[in-house]
Length: 437
Image 1 (cartoon, rainbow, N blue to C red):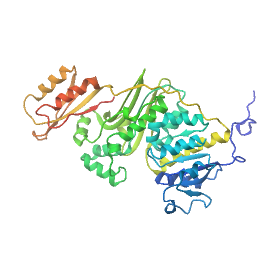
Image 2: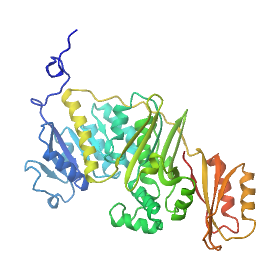
Image 3: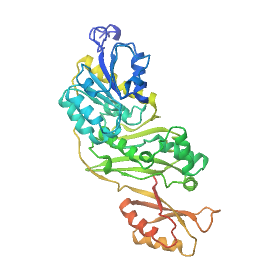
Image 4: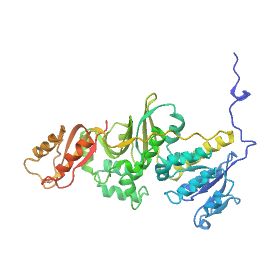
């Protein structure tokens, strides 16, 4: 049988925009990302997307000469909701008033593109159902890992697989701080000040440092990749504040380094999930990620392991992800494709009870019998010591040393840690980090 060249195939599945009206787009939020999105839209000349409205508080001060004169500027959401726009971009962040705006747009049959991780993490399943009920789309590819196209890959490239685990470095601020402590052996406080001076960390960086940002993103990855409905507050988040330069010295003795790792694994009706600093092999993909980059690894039943690496934040990378979602929606509207049905989600139990080896770093006032006392507690909880590490050169009045444990569950370890921290020679609570292999 002869083959027809794709350029001349009579029924080639190519969407032409020559006679198709451009999708009308409204942008809500004109901050760093919003300006970058508007610039891309104003520079495009393919006729598929047309920016018609920009909504922002005090918009008179925000106006830019490169925005076309026919674009309507407003500070009233209802102007957007009552207009004839096809797609609303929500970039104001937070839950209020973003949730009302997104719900209102979807109820009006307008598709929505958002980068709002907190909104999707908490209300994503309900909003996806609302979009399906009104035959429109909700896309949120920029809500996790910014310029790394992991969510679009989960939506299209990997939806034929059956994923069972997702893990990632999802917060660039934490990764910058930890990699700076690693390379320069500086105190945590100094690395944080550097990150703030460079604009990687906010003045109040609690949401990053204590894991709130990463667990919201993990909840979204679980939604998109594992079809699991999980609240971010059900995922345990451990802070990186207690990690110091000495921990990188000991980690190196074990062939490891330390990163903030977000991980979720679905087993039967339980989702094991956790966010926090962990030891990872220096030669592993996680161990090689430096500065403020993001990395996501997925594990599937058929496709095996996949990796996604790139810039996780910043105006331009995030704007590219937003515009990519816009194009996906616009091409679907131009082709007359119906919106997808709502996801069939499970509501698993959420647990942090992973079984892993553990790194325990103690700081003690040196005296005879310390190891014996700790071994007695560990033995009582059926925890097996793998190794004891003590580097020279520290004052005996505040001596750090490390115990590594053979694999055990978190629920076994926590009662032992509580008893160990109450011992008279313990100067501070024991730092416990899972060792991921």
